[in-house]
Image 1 (tube, rainbow, N blue to C red):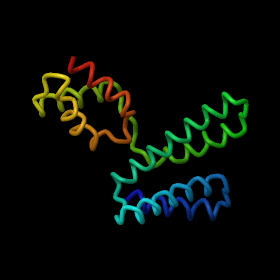
Image 2: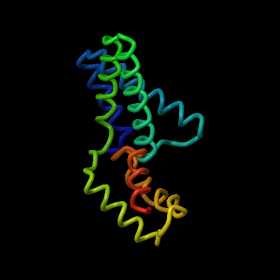
Image 3: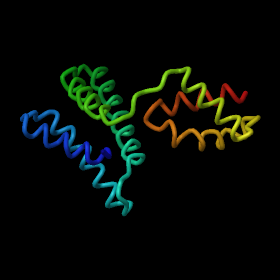
Length: 147
């Protein structure tokens, strides 16, 4: 089942269960997917859906941090709930050892030897690891491996 089909099924389940908070979070995701499909004139495949969900989860986590620092824990809690619902659509996260193995393989596959080859390594890793690890941390690890 594709992520889009899973999203539609989850929306139906939330409607039947009358779980309004979950339904709202799922509808936000569906709305964003439809917006991107219209803007880019595409049909979102699983890889694009993962990129959309990753971005939305990061936005929710950043908002929760800002609400917490502003003394608004009730708003932060709502953002954290939405992030947890959205994370259900992401593949399981990889361990550091698994990420390091992917980095080593990408470096050997691209024959990268210096920092100037970082873009080649990241281009090889991004489609495989998108949504499974934090891309900022991945970039730092690749930088360390190449230096």
